[in-house]
Length: 292
Image (cartoon, rainbow, N blue to C red; front, side, top):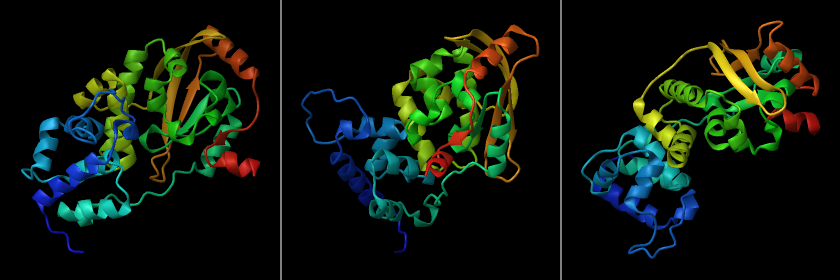
């Protein structure tokens, strides 16, 4: 099918799609109050897609042409299937601008070998969107049992904003969380049409006012080192150096390592914490492979 822009039909299609959805279908709270029309309201779709209500209204009215980035967020917000996505992009005149298919993220073998060797140093392999792809047992001892989390929730930023236990570890949570948002904003420039990124940003914007505010600031950050201060329920306060190394293969994977200054109270506390657990690193894919 040749893509021909049809703003009026696009608006009618968007309206029909939102009419088929209930707030609960999209993770929104159900106000349990009667609605004049079925489905989602315009402002609810706008919130899910992280765009202004005015912009979305003009889209439905056929008064503005949607960008590829906005189309990607609407696909996720309106839960469109493959055929509906094709139709949406055709109506927008952007059939060739559909988001590319993305291969599943798998930690590189070299990264896993490094995790195996870091027995007393918490370490994580981070992928696109700060997804947590793999970890060692020291990281489990410090943070949480990542293997117990659903794969879709193994994301550093999601845990930082939505998991009370993870969030409570950070003695300087506001500073660390704002920096993490800036790092995600920097990463978004490499793949602005990533639908999973749009889903993550949309969900966190709805659930946390701080995230919504900091994302709107458009602050960016590329720092690869720094200091993090934790308060662990077993060993107390920890001051750890955080260093991140990017994989040279262009995969976007990074190794994040946390270390303590030798002979410091944090060093001793970290040794005590990690001595309680020993084993091998596991990740989303490797857990299945090693237990098959």
